[in-house]
Image 1 (spheres, rainbow, N blue to C red):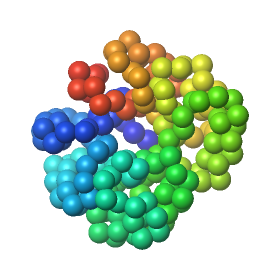
Image 2: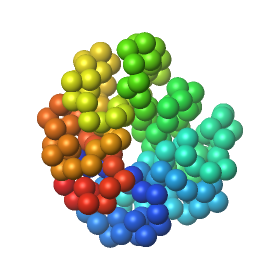
Image 3: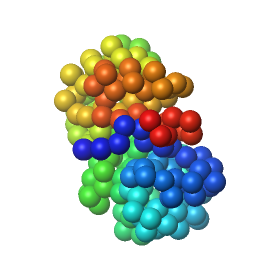
Image 4: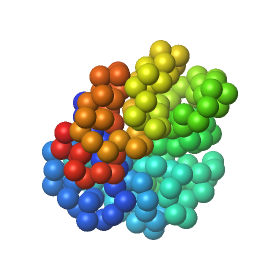
Length: 180
């Protein structure tokens, strides 16, 4: 379980440095280069943080079998986030926390993705956009997996609404929401 209501998702190094000194336990790396990845993960873990990497957004990383082997053996983050089932399955082999993203586009896409996610069995599912509490509850009921809400959450009230809908946490790159 994640015992943190808001999971900061960072895009800029100054935000990473800020979070290293904060009380937050989890940090999500959204947009960085492959060459910096190992250094960032080590710095975060040395500061007592758990680092989750959004695999689909790492520049220079191919999320295939060999890319995941590199992540699992060399970089050694605490977990990964991806839309790809193959990434989730490979990350599980390395004992990483897995978060599979699910975009709420339409009913057909949701039904298709629910089937795929049930096969992959990620530790968490991140539902985007995170501002649809009724859909979040439906996805949680259908999957039986802890849900994280992300995307388009702009206010503290929206964070609270997502938490009330049953999510384990909310991801956001909005620095003003990180301390909630």
